[in-house]
Structures are given as C-alpha cells and as structure tokens.
Image 1 (cartoon, rainbow, N blue to C red):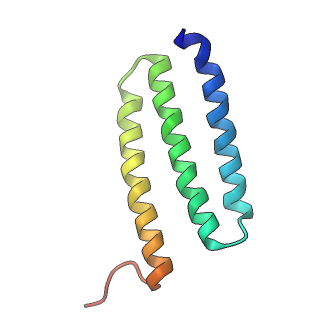
Image 2 (image 1 turned 90 degrees about the horizontal axis):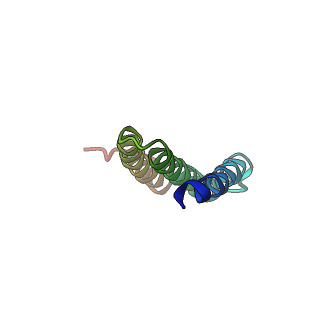
Length: 91
C-alpha cells in the first residue's frame, strides 16, 4: 500500500517545493518571501521523511531533524531582523 501511494505523495511535495521556490523568487514583499522560505524548508523536510520511508533507512529522518532545527532558527532570526533591523541585541 505504501509503495503505491509514495510516488504520488512525493510528486505533490515536489510541486509544493517548486511553487514555494517560485514565491520566494517572485514574492511581492519581504513577509511573503519569509513565508515562502519557511514553506520551502518544511517541504524539503517532508521529502526527506518520504525518502526515509521509501528507502527504509534512519539517515533521512536524522537529516530531517537537522533541517527542521535549522529552518526554525533561520525563520526566527529572519523575523527578528525584519522587526528590529538587527539579529543580536546590543549591550
């Protein structure tokens, strides 16, 4: 059952990845581009989980965890930069 559904789900996430990359490049404003970048890493994370299921290995799941952590930190840093103009607070 999983082998039959996996190509369709992978295609859907690749399509989502391409659409969010298009929004990242063509976004009319900075918040749109930040949201597109956030969606881009979530789609990449989902693709890694799907590859882990397809190839039955734990390596892809660990890579998905690392991408999830880096994506969250990157989104928070970008949001702080947009709000304050600086990532690290001056002392």
